[in-house]
Image (cartoon, rainbow, N blue to C red; front, side):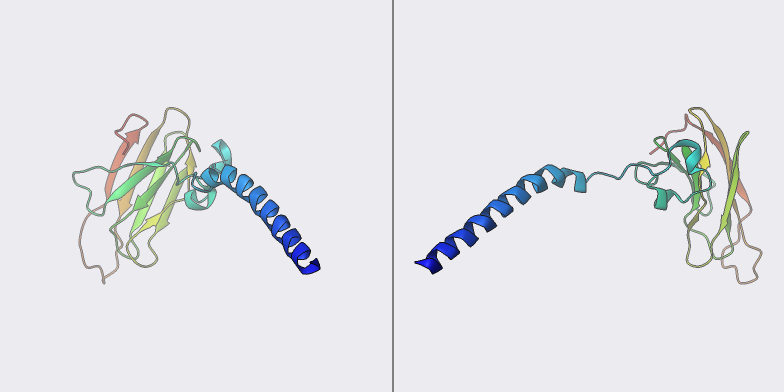
Length: 159
């Protein structure tokens, strides 16, 4: 009889703990699938990585469709109040540069593979940005193209 009592007690405790955890887990489960909040809204994002700060999660992209030889993207996170540039189809040594009118400038060079992004530059609700792709002068370059730039504001058709 004592073995049955201990067994019943263990089963009861395990059931109670599992039930409590399931209730807490059910409340927390949707939060596991939500994007994390940005870690640096506003000026706190300036010069930081968009991925490390959480700003890349809600970012939108604008990519000029014509004359964009290496596919440079302007990325914008409204919740972080920041923009950054990304070069997607370049070669090691190619550079992406970003300058916010009346604000910060950022640049990044591809070290290896074909893509790279700049750190973030803070923007307000209205902004003007100049983004450029600058080719490397390396003799090992496989594709030839010239420096390419464009300007964008908060009104471009963000994807």
